Length: 507
Image 1 (cartoon, rainbow, N blue to C red):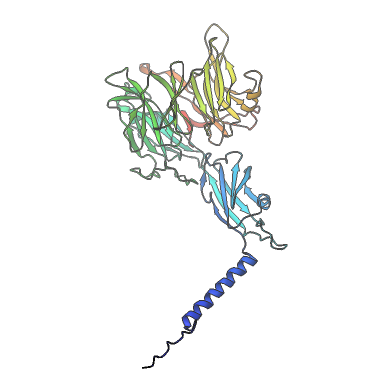
Image 2 (image 1 turned 90 degrees about the horizontal axis):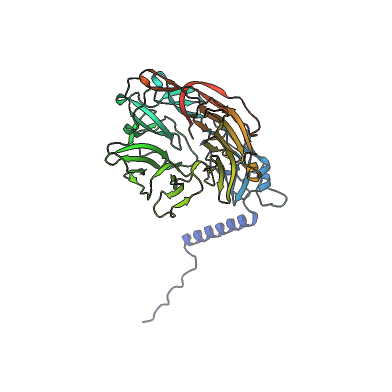
């Protein structure tokens, strides 16, 4: 039987094959045209990191992400910020970073516009111009807190929004507050307080014994829509941070007396000095972290005053005749010791500089600027150096000082002053870059707070008087001192319509 030959298949004979082939050819053609001609679509801003956000002093730069590589000069020439915020531009591919020279002033709204900017690649004589861009952001409100001293405010934390001219009482009337520290997003305040009912006197201004104080947090009612989410934004708390006056106990005093405390700048760590009720000689700092049990920091010798560093990683502690720097994180660098200095008063926000005090053998005191490049004496005085704060640019150091008055009676005259740090580092002698700003009443117990954007100092003027039953009552007005960029220019302080102590700006 004769075999028939197998039929020869027709190449691409099937209609689906021909359709697939046509589609492939069309796509190849389109890709070729795009590669040859290029994308003629107008470039645009894809992302603005501060879009509709509330910016704080810690927010030093914003980012613009473009859809195409841009001509750098054309962007720099056409970028407009209203009101003006001086800064400098840097690039990383299609990302433009604008870093502010100074913090954006609080309590204001800003608009960012970019028009007529061009892409980088020329197509013949043509540069594609970008789509017009416009966006807004604002800075945080100017807000501060203080301890009230009169009426229903006595012994309670009072919050005042200077931008909106709103005041509210935060802590309940049954608690007498001693000290407080705000959290970085201003949504909460950490404070120490005791039960007012245990006071030794029925006077509403009588202090509660320190052995009775516990640590609490209270919500402020402020919600900051920050550019970058922070771990201190307390989404896991058992209350809503948006409601003011919600109190939560953080640390009890059943077995230990709670004394001084500090809150880390990132809001994650609390350090508190505690004394054992069973052994009064056992005093040491304890560390509290969210979700962990409090734990003591074991010291070879007793310590005194302390301050958490600006990077939230270490604790500077007065110990013996010097300062110990203790790591707060496990596995960090070994502790170090600074034998030359007796106290640390202030740290720059980026942790690159510190203001430290040296107690001299001739009974004078010296203030040193300490950086990674070394140390420089910038002030020497026969009086006291009570506090110091770096301005956000690290160009000025604002100090609360005292001057020893002549006479047989020991008296000190407190005053506020500014030190020009750039001039101080090249000065031949200390005090050459010191500029007095304001003399204060003869009262050492003055609390000074520098605004986060560096535009004003807030301070109190406690008035001490002997009340009935031998109790000491502190009361006095609060003052606002505007600051000029030139430390030689003195401005007049403004009296605020409040009576209180320990005023402090919120971040």
